[in-house]
Length: 158
Image (tube, one colour):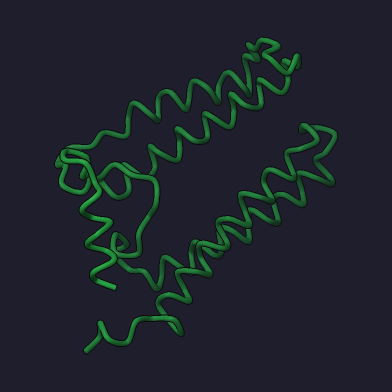
């Protein structure tokens, strides 16, 4: 396994290692994401785009804003560039994995509310998008719980 990993590490271009950077700012992605979300929720500035639907373009703008917010959260939380929160970066992985699973379940419940009682106030696909996000968050929580529990590498403990 080490041989396989060393072959992948050998393919990384020089200067692209992001773990060694000392100063990472998440404020720029947070500001851009906030402006995009503000536009989606309040201002509503949009254009038809190639799909000839201003509301779809507005949804894409909002999803892009959420993506920028995620990047900002990652940079503020882990103080490094990246997108995937490796278990090695977590301070208390056992506690955090349960919190991640709880947030995922809460997002799934919120998706039900967005698709049923709140449907008249929100766009129709809101419940589906929230369900997808909730399932992905839950999958991450379950994976981390399994990786720390029954699927943990026993050789690293010795």
